[in-house]
Length: 403
Image (tube, rainbow, N blue to C red):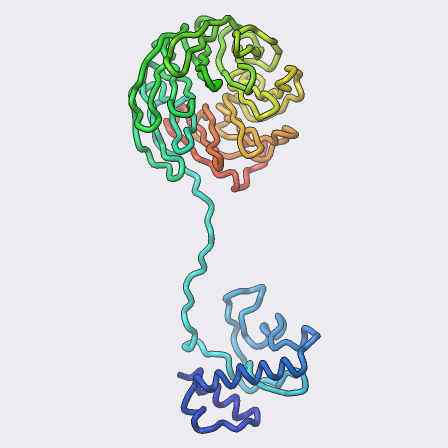
């Protein structure tokens, strides 16, 4: 190869003597060069960067790939290059050892870790709510009267299961998935591992949302202005308790149940043990979704284009923050509050600490229920009949027009 002939020429022009055995063996030439370089460096190591064989400036002058232009090979001028000092010796290696274009050995492509892709996955008709079981996302499809199970890691649909009429809310209890059927006045219990139906239980009128407190399933009944408590192990009714006008969202904070009252512009706090009202607090107009971040309760005010944050222990309002148009639902995950903006077709990320907008992500048409799977955020798109997966590692747009 030309590369090895160049090696021999370089040694000869430097004043060295090339034994016949070395001339016939390119590998020996390379070993000799490496040994010579090490000896010179050990005898008088350079302390100034200009003494190195190649600096950025020298790369540009000689045609080698530069730091600023990786991979770009510049044209090389003809003729010998001036020798560069290295310690007390003068050697000429750069111009003679540089391989020509046809000497270059192809390198394998650089492996770069990629972020999980954003996905938009077709599900049933008019999906409204979503929950995560630790492995899969479960979506309640209101107009299809079924639920869709999607593998969170890949976005693959792995099952569709019939439930009651107009499923609206959905929750996971550690082993089962519970669905509130708005048009049937029932809740359905499915085995999460298989999707098999284990039971259907009567509740109040127009059940809207559902939550789990560790022992009981709680259902908000929008048509009867109350909530139903069922024993999760058996489905037996363990109480019905009055709340505000048209209850929608429901959440558990570890001690109390919180219910948003759509037509009362309030959120209500109930004692888990007795169902008694522990407090009623004003929020924005048409409150719908509600979630808990470990310290505070967050409420999506669909009519005010805002979210309200309350200190869970006292019910004190600690902030009201603007988001997108017609915020419908929200979820906590990754230190952030994720809000679906129904009329803006976007997802807004808020700092749980300050309430500041951290970014906006596109979604489908009228994003509704939101869930976080520990790494990525999911939102169901009511009129697109899809579910979207968005990666929080990707930068959201800080443009108010997208809200």
